[in-house]
Length: 491
Image 1 (cartoon, rainbow, N blue to C red):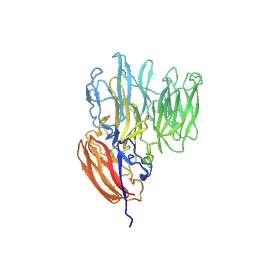
Image 2: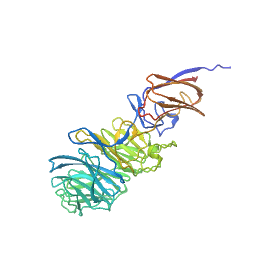
Image 3: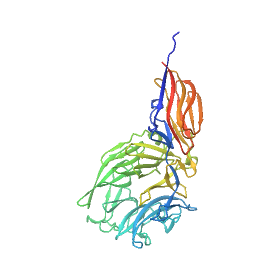
């Protein structure tokens, strides 16, 4: 009889910097490459909590950093929020305003630096959720609102809002070289632009200084979103991107098609992030530099399968792209908002420089804006069906609820699937409470750990051909590092 020989092998996860890989076969993953990973991220080699949400706090004045909690608005919820900065003739200084659209079809506002803990109603009915933009009329900084069912509403905060009945109704708007460009709500193959001399004038003519239209009737689908980027206006459509090019001192325009796709583009997610535009498509995240489009290799495309991203939204804040969307985790688990009805179920934080991301799972976000006014630096968040306003927080908590955290490996087979192995022990530094689960074919071994500043040794003694490691925790001070798995493998 031939005597079997065994080799001792140590597998190290000396940092948790690898992103999850949902697209590749779990037998092909590296040990440090998780198959599932949510509500955790890597920081200096340690597995820690990812982002959470807390109730919004705003300062009491432009002079004092002290903040007060924004009060819940009873009986209504917000679905959209905008930032409005204007120079007040009354106060002779700039004021910073938040304006929100509510479920009672009214607009509400609050001064960011004079927060009296609540929002104030603008007593005008807006029958459907509007688009909005800041621009200048007669030297005043105004904010304009347009919806499918209402006339263009213009508001200078020191005065009463007024309607502009001659303006078109539109579904998207952007400012480019001091001119407003909009997608016509009644003909979503048509872009309109206003007069250069009068922003409230939309009557078309042959004069290059006056308002005009640009029609796009081709195979790329309906027009959905406009973005000013560099020297051009880009039109995001169901199946492509078009570029509006200006000639003769911005008085004449032509259209160039720069990207076509057989897959649906989720145009509401298109977001300018410094020198690139990022957007979600049916099969993943893409980046666009103004001329070419490339897919970002994040290996999460399978999580988009079967999910409409109709309500997905994005925001670029503090050097990161935040994406609220609906992902399929396919793990028979419900987290946070997933226990009820939801439109989105996660917040992705993506770094355009490192091309890495993490996921906060269990949050249903409908709108985000970044504030960087004076000494305020916050990502403000609206959640579907919530009467509170929220802000991004780094503690992994959703208000007072700790979000469950999970890091799960792929199949661990060492050098070959066919060889027998014995997992002798696991060593790790665990400065929190957590559970470690080892699956070995039909056997499972679980360890419940408490906070310790020393290296913890877990004796496993499991024999088989394949293993899976799962780390889970409900500790909002998650801190796991220096993980090592010690095997003996038949050679």
